[in-house]
Image (cartoon, rainbow, N blue to C red):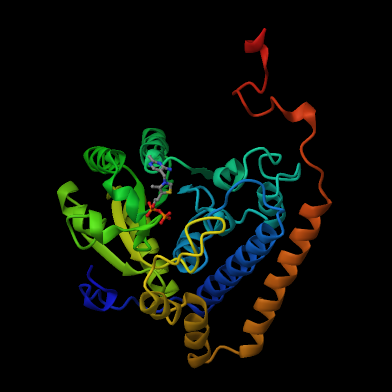
Length: 340
Ligand SMILES: Cc1ncc(C[n+]2csc(CCOP(=O)(O)OP(=O)(O)O)c2C)c(N)n1
């Protein structure tokens, strides 16, 4: 597998404004605090069902979250806590959903793998690998038909690039010139299998882009400035009628694939090298070097921790879903007449 340092060098993007940089930092710090708490709650047996944390991959969701407009759509996988928070969904209903409480985004009936918030245009977290790429195309097609200046962003993992739906979706998006940005978060592992051991090209997404007439875009997914710049450029292109983009963001998950997986199948030196490139402390150091007041960063960190504490309290105080909610949101009319 080609390492990041051996990847084709992309020209350094211009630094975002100080305001954007602070928003990027805040977003990443909030995600990190949230995911750490989610892990603690899981260890206490308070998270119902499975969960897949985005620890280490925050810079990808943050870069897009800051660049997106409220009217844009997001689709993501079961590893979707970061992307949900990045759309401005409040922490308490996300936390409560993980815990199966009525305050949850889906009244506690969906759990971690199904986070969805239509008002925030977070159009769902999908557990079937690859399935959501074609659904995301549908949202983008709808924007195009309506002539609405909306863009759809669809996140997925490297393993998804070997699924048929990936190729079907890329092809149709290119043929129809849809306003969509496909974002592959290449964290090198699909569950317990290294992507390099089952993929014919070194860069599972960028290496396939030319097959669909797209530029190969390979970025450092642990650098929030780079993810923001790539997001801003692809969104602008799509909004201007320039069609789809496929971005491969190289990153790494700090923990295991899901739940209690300790991730021991990964080589120690690989884990150590990527932990040294943790997107949050490296970005913090860059901001301090650029003259940002450290006190402002500490306030961001404290506020994130307070928000997580508050969200946890609210989620804990919420009961499990009332039995009366069992049929709600199951069918489009909210009813259960089909049973009779
Ligand atoms: C169609 C399908 N096949 C297999 C699975 C089982 N499965 C769940 S996650 C996963 C790995 C996916 O890896 P990747 O796309 O790289 O995403 P990551 O988990 O690294 O974010 C697999 C094989 C599934 N959910 N859907």
